[in-house]
Image (tube, rainbow, N blue to C red):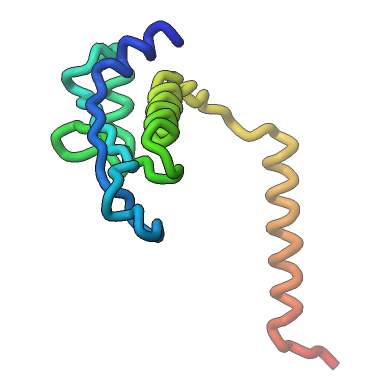
Length: 135
C-alpha cells in the first residue's frame, strides 16, 4: 500500500494558509497551516474504495467528492504537511478495508428456552404486584 499511497499523495493539492488560534506576533505573518484537497472522483483509487469513501458519513468530504483536511496542529509548515498526509493515509486505509458481510444466524434452542423461562419469571413477579391479597 506504501507505493500506492505515494502515487495517490501526488494527486493531492496542498495550500498553505494562516493557522487559527494563538501565535503571538508571528501569527499574521507566517502561513504554517495546510489545506489538503483530495479529489476522490479524479483519483487513481480503485472504484470500490472510491465508493466506500463517498458513501461514508464524513463531513470532510464535500458534495463534489473532494476530501478537505486542515492541518494546523504544529508550528511548522513541514510538520503540518506530514500530519495532513498521515491523516489522508489513515482515511484511505480505513476505506480500503472491505467490510465483512454479516451472516444471518438463528438463536440456539437453549437460548430460546432461557428467554422463555426468564419471561415467565418476570410475568410471575408482575402478577404478584397486582395487589390482590387473599385472606
